[in-house]
Length: 252
Image (cartoon, rainbow, N blue to C red; front, side, top):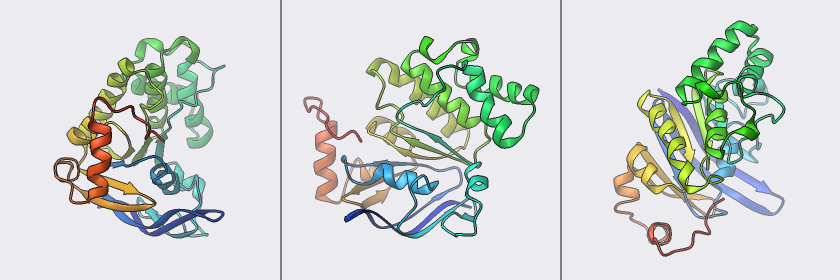
């Protein structure tokens, strides 16, 4: 079953065309990693999938619902899409537990006891059961990102979107977040991940999409796109990000 279908997607910001005719799909249960240099349109593509950015033209269908149809109830459709951003976007004045329950109550209409039960189960899922009563400022960056993942999972999404989820983290904190994402992949969660973590893309992704200048240059299994890229643009990008002596400047 197709979880995400994108057809002839264009996005302009004034005179700047950021997405120039994107066509691709994600099957249910697949993990698709989107890689590419800064400014290639990766994050804009992700934000168009749940209409945080409204496409200039084209179609976006998620879980059988066309989000780009003007008659679609976007708020209802978004309830099935979880999103994790570069920044954690937690409410600083609320405990971790309350951060994970509040949307359940206000968006899904769950009662307090049910929302708390779901929240605690998902905090356990991401390894933060002992941090339910803590405030975001008392957590490391990696813990805050895992709390953000738990918050998204508590909404029972059919699709999870990750926009560079480790780019704001210190290197020693990245591993715990990627471990949670690996576990989700093993559970069969459908995931669309914008990332600069090439090892994660190689190990976990079913497909890797390489974007440059608003178009998809390559799309295929990680062994092909990362291991044996066909296009020089892909090879140049990978030489840059895989060279340990290179100072990375491609984070979005």
